[in-house]
Every structure is written in C-alpha cells, then in structure tokens.
Length: 315
Image (cartoon, rainbow, N blue to C red; front, side, top):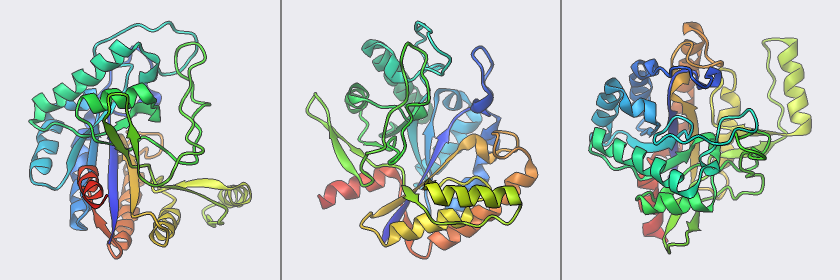
C-alpha cells in the first residue's frame, strides 16, 4: 500500500508578513492539536518540521513530545537562517530573507548544531528528518545534515525553480529544482555518508479545474490549464479537487508515496495570508476531512523516519 507522508513547516505566526526586527509570535501552537487529531483519525502521522521559535514555546514542546512519544507523530527540523542562533551579520546587498547556504560554512554548521541540540534538549528526541527554510539546499548543507545525524530530507520541489526568490547577499537566490527527480534518491556527501531525499509531491499538469465561485477564478483556471501549472498536495482553501487529482496520479504512477505539506501557522485564523479568519479555517478543515477520508482508501500513513527505515530495508 502506498504511503501518505504529512509534513508541516512548524514555525512562527504569519512569517509572510514578518520584517527584520519584528517579534515572532508562536500562538499557532494552540491550534495544532485539532490537525494532529484529524490526521490520527485516519491513521496518518504528521511530521512536525520544527524551527527555532516553536521549539522555545513550552506549549508546543508539551504538544509535540506527547504525540511523538506515543508514535503518532514525528518531530523533525526546519531551519530559518535569519533568526536561528548563533547570529551572524551578512553583507546585505538585496531585499530578501537570507538562505542558510549564504552563510560561511562554519556559521552554517553552528546553526544546524544549535537547533538540533535544542530540539533534543527540549524533547529528549533527536531529529533525523529535515526540510530547509525557503527550500534552499546545496552540497555543503547535506554534508552538515549528515554530520549531525539527519538521514532523510524533504526540501526538493520537483518542477519548481526558486531562483526568483532572492536571498540577502549579492546575487543570492533560491534553488532550481525544475529538473529534479520526483522519486526518492540518495544524496552522497564528501564524508562518505548519504541522505535519502524524499521530494515533495508536485506534478505539472494542463488539466482544467473549473472554479465556480467567480468569473475571475474561472478565467484563472483556464489560463493555468493552457500554460500548465505545478500542482501540490498543499491546501489553499479552494483546491480539494486538485489535491485529490495529484493523489490519484501518484497512485497510478511508479512513485510509492505522496507528500502533503502545510505551514503550522496556516492552521490558525489570521496566521497566514491564505486563511485570514475562522470561516476560512473551517472551510480548510472541511476540505482536509474530505481529503484524508479519500486518501485513506488507498494510502497508509508514514512518517519520514518510518519511510527511510523501510526504504533502506528494501534496497
């Protein structure tokens, strides 16, 4: 039976609106249990990919530790370089949030070590799964992840080029995954170890999904179908049919898993630009209930760690 891997970028409230110097709140931690319980209702097991702010929140630590120790969830690491200690001032040349790969190698390592150790200190669980902040990776990043015990990564987004997303130093930009593999593969490192890359499930499609809410949405749907678009299993409040379609296409393919993703702050009213109020959150959960019920007919839940263990055993 194919696997459904549910990943959550677990981070502060509405980082889309965050500006340098702003305080980062973590009130979305109060809204995570509802999502966890919904996942478990259908025997799915979320992977909480956790950043620095969230792991400092006692409320979050109590929540994630409980479910992880019960075997109902996994805690992984998600690193935002701009606010993760130790702090280091880059030479700012353009208006973008800095990627970890922009920092000197020793600073990269120090940031990875700091957050890895902090997660362990706070939960007693050493993380082995990872997703990069803003999706950016390079060879050095994977080498350092391996050094600190990570065995599986889910940062690669097939068909997507992030080069238009600027970093902070001169000429820096996001990673280009437009030609990346869409199935798991091993990434070797210079220290002789390797990391299993489990890419996010994204397909490129010309299928027309009719949006009946407005003429504007209909026109947008036709435009996307004509030019082709990347479809994720990533809820936006109005894409249930698209997500089910990706699930179906994955099921008939040679890929043995599908990966869902969301941000923790998107589970809180006003925590993101996408879900601005309680009404939009209720619509989100209506779609999530329908999606998980649909997925449970053909897919079995798996964490990233579990997927890694099975993949290595079958190789």
